[in-house]
Image 1 (cartoon, rainbow, N blue to C red):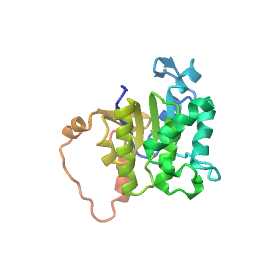
Image 2: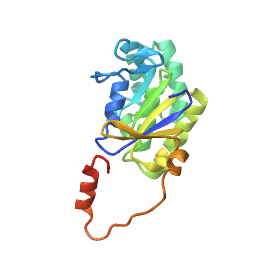
Image 3: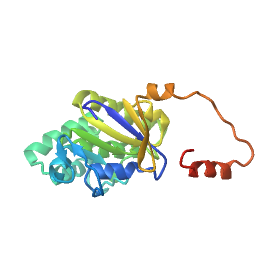
Amino acid sequence: MKAGEIYGLVGSDGAGKTTTLRLLVGALKLDAGEITVCGFDVRKQTEQARAQIGYLSQRFSLYEDLTVLENIRFFAELRGLKRDEWLPRCMEILDFVGLAAHKDRRAGQLSGGMKQKLGLASALVTRPRVLLLDEPTTGVDPVTRQDFWQLLIRIVSQEGVAVLISTPYMDEASRCTRVGFMRGGHIIAEGAPSELRATLDGRIVELRGRPLPLLRQIAAQEDG
């Protein structure tokens, strides 16, 4: 991945997307191979590699009794920022994601879209060079998804972050610079969205009746 690039990791549940992100951030140990983040070996230089990464997990949770500012302060201090560092950065990033006016509101009183923005702000507070997002728009409404992507594109443009985002949505994949389709822990196709579309013949198959058993059989085939 390059700075200023959005790489979409696309696959069904169980394809290995979350596992890949957890390996990248050092939350899981490698059985084989190697991962390098900004020149740091994740296996041998775990802390240095983690320092380059902002990570928004699929099960990201906020402290609902804390305010917006208190939440982001917690994550900033957890990553080692001191007050003279975290306070201006927190206000800067809250303004960037549109939450500065709500800094004193408790997180439990936020809408789903606002919580999503706060999670993103928490991942960005340390100015990471690499941003890992694990299905950040799953379960939110279409308008919130659209707002999130506009915000993400601005982040990439203004901060030059390299973004790796996992998603089950093809419309989101089309917004990425490059896309990798994952199945069984392996990338089975990769390229720019336009390049991948060009490899398809565009046929639509309609199955009538009760196709579920047939679909399960097709999905179970290794080369299907």
